[in-house]
Image (cartoon, rainbow, N blue to C red; front, side, top):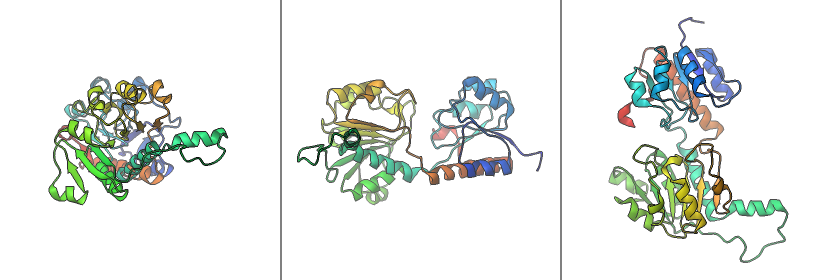
Length: 328
């Protein structure tokens, strides 16, 4: 094996096939414990490695990059979202950042539809009732939910995942509406049977289901706040498979408790793993542990993209999935 192989530090356990290939290609240090690293542990890792492979649980800011010294040259993120990484700060310090776009599109869109069905058809309530052993048979008015066919779906963020969700929603007989920073090309709108709304407020007042599919940026932080929640129909539901910070979680909890909206399905949370305990108490909320991309196929494909980005960097080329500040 060549002594010129880059030293790579991986912060969490990855699929076995990905870790095995990393060991063949690079001088790699893997995470045996698969536990979230502390700030100091991350800094130590960046001091000792040419490449670090973090994921969404690893926050890397400018102060940490300064403390890391000059060895680190690439942050090869295991995931598409990079809001946990100071991309601008890394760029200023000559550290490249790459991600894994596209591979989780279909899986996340599947999960969004799953949450829509779970909330509108009250599946968790039915499951809990069955597991309690209390069911004594069918009743005409028991666990009545809402039909999604004929309902209006509003998509906040019409990127890859938003468009994949639009295709699925159309198959279920829903009409598709979207709000985006920029309007899609007319041919793309036609392909996705989607209607654009320049005003987010107006779209919210006219849809039955809202799906959050935009990234977390300063502009999208608490984009769905108390004022906007009050614009929605009392029969409407919200699902979020993107970033928790887009929704003001306290305002959402109040709206759900007051029955100002009918329900919510959340795969991501404003404060990461620190889930608002009041949300757990509500029967009209479905909570999942960030499972949107959790398929065997998707996680292996993410790893393959990480491998390709590191390999290109080690070979003296630009990583194919490099993230630059202008993209944020």
